[in-house]
Structures are given as structure tokens and as C-alpha cells.
Amino acid sequence: MSAASHPFGDLVSHLMRTTALGPGEATRVVADVLAYFDEPVEAVVRRRHVELKSAGLTNDQIFERIAAELPQRRVAAPELSVRQLRRIVYG
Image 1 (cartoon, helix red, strand yellow):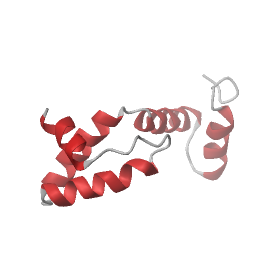
Image 2 (cartoon, rainbow, N blue to C red):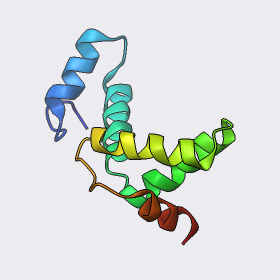
Image 3 (cartoon, helix red, strand yellow):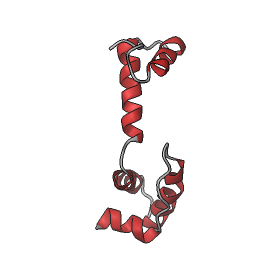
Image 4 (cartoon, rainbow, N blue to C red):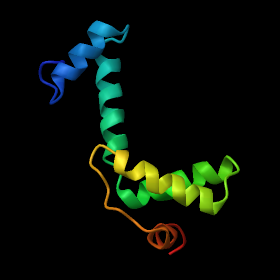
């Protein structure tokens, strides 16, 4: 798929102009970033919990950090209480 026919062709073209990425690589980078930001809130919470737990943080630290990170997502997630975050992780 050429940069012009890609839904985010302007972004693909920008990456090609400002980096050493070729058309295929730039298209894959854009697709990866979009997929990252399309991740559902529940999946983000679970993934971040595992990542932060493996970094040695306690659950209190983890849930505080996740609560601070969620509003920074491309489409802001709803404000979730610590209890709601725990329910996502542990059911």
C-alpha cells in the first residue's frame, strides 16, 4: 500500500521524510501505534499491571500509576476507582 492510499498517508509520508524508514516500515510503525492506542481499557489495565508488577511495584503503587496514566491515552478512558481497577485485574 502506498503512502498516498494509506488512511494515514500524511503521517506515513512524514515518517519517511523525517526518518530513514521506507514506505513499508513507516506503514508498519503507524499500524503498530494505532493498534497500541486502540487497545481496550481493560487490556491496558491488565497489561500495565503485569509490566509494573514485574518491575517490583506494589499493587498500591501500580493502581495509583495506572489511574494516572489512563487519562493520558489517545481517547481518555473513563475515570476508574482503585476498586474498579482491581476488579479488571482480578475479576
